[in-house]
Length: 294
Image 1 (cartoon, rainbow, N blue to C red):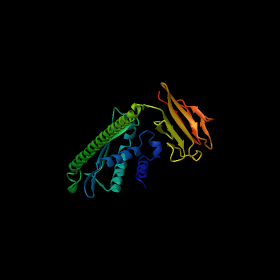
Image 2 (image 1 turned 180 degrees about the horizontal axis):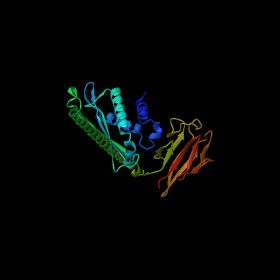
Image 3 (image 1 turned 45 degrees about the horizontal axis):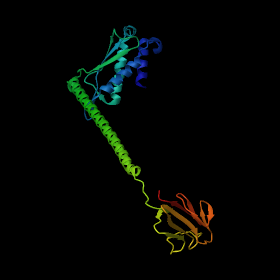
């Protein structure tokens, strides 16, 4: 039989009526017993190996209406509450500084259905139990000091963790700013790179620029050409570019050298044609862009 069952049956025997019919108030004796058990567990103090002491006096403060209703059964009620406390102490291997006591008092400031349990320790046993309340109080203080020390250590650990997280955020932000600065510094020279200035006519082929410094520049697949075009569609001597001056004016002439596939200027096949800046020469599948001095 459980503690609460035993309490209910004992009270029923004491008042000779069904338990539920006698106690219709919001505060039930089983609630008081449960609160006493919780107070014992919360206030348990370890005195040594196998010795855990708990309070033995419980003052139950009730609202005036609840007190008036339960006072008629105070003797039977307190006896059963004491028995419930003893059973719980035996089950948990608790020791007490003296016999268990339960006192019912009226609390003027409490509302109906609200109660408080105030546990204390009181010496009452002879011999081994003498001084138990003082020993219990000392153990309680030691437990409270340990709890405060643990809470203080936890607060300090939380503060250290918070500070470390803040430092890490600052470090990450600084790294991000530094990376952004380095990236912008890296891009800046490319943006400010001066444009190359050409001093004379030139050709652009396969992304590289070839200046036209000679009066005659031959183009073709042959190694003896001035500009070798690595293209199977180009003849060994495919075309030539001649540079001459007509007074102050520069003349650049493109002439096909009887190539097999022909020479094309801006998409049209030509035999001999004067070049202008931006013209596009095609030999086989190779495209060459003309740049004249300007």
